[in-house]
Length: 356
Image (tube, rainbow, N blue to C red):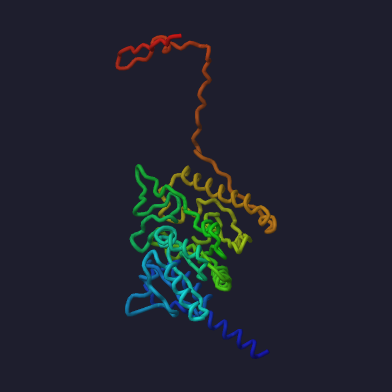
C-alpha cells in the first residue's frame, strides 16, 4: 500500500514539475504561455515538440537560452505537422514510444500550415497537434488570420469610416479535422486547466492523429488588461463564442456548459471590438445562436443525454429605430407623374408610350 501511495505522490510531483521554465519573455497575461505550461505538465518529460515559428518560439528559445524542459525543434512557420510526421516515422523505425506534439499558433494552423496539418491527418501519423488560438498573427504585428472573429480590429483589418474590421467569421478548423478523420478532436481554454490537461492526456493515450485547439487570450492584440486574461476566457465560453467540447470517434461531448450570457459582455471587455455598434453586436449574436442551433440539430441525441439544450439570448436589430411603413398604392389609381413624366432641372421628360 505504501509503495502505491509513494508512486502516486511521485507521479503527481513529476506532473507538477515545470517543463516550461520560468524566465521566458512572453507578455504578462499571455494565454499561450499558460497553455504550454499545462500541456507539458500533462504530457510529461517523455515528449518531443515540433514548434512552428510563432510567439511560442520567439519568447522561449532565444539562443543560448531556452524555456523547454523537453526536446524542442524550432521549425519553419508552415512545417510543424510535417516535421512531427518525420519524427514519428523515425521513432517507429527505432522502436521507441515517445509523445510527439506539433505546436503552432492559429496563423501557422488555420492558414500557412493547413496543408501540412491535412497531410499529417491523412497519413494517420501518431502525432498530437496543438494549436493555441490567439485569433491573429500576434508575433508579426497583429495581422488578421483565418481565426480572427467577425468585427475584430487587426492591423490588416482596421476599423474606420468605411471599414467594420474583419468581415469574415472564424474558420471551422475543428470540423475540418473531424471530417478528415482525426482520431481525437477537442477544444480547450486556459481558463479551465484541468479540462485542458485531461484532454492532452487522453489524446496522447490514443493512436493516430489528434488535434486540440486551445483558446488563448493575447492582451496586446485583444487590447485588454493583462490581469483579465482568465476572466475574458471564461466570458468567451459563457457567451457561447467559444465552445469547449471533444469528439472521440463519433462521440460528441460538451465539457463545459455555457451560461449563455449576451455576447456583448464578452465583446465589450476588449478594445479590438470597441468600435462595434449595437447592430454589429446583434449580428454576431445571431451567428452565435445559429451555430448553437446547428450543433443542437446535428447532435440532438447527445444533448438529450447531457440533459440540456442551448438557452440562447434573444436578438433585436435596429434598437430604437422604428421603420415607417410605406402606404399601399392603389394599382387602379393613375398618378400624375405617369401622365407627364418627371421634372429634372426644370425640364419635363415625358414618359414614352409603349405600343400595345
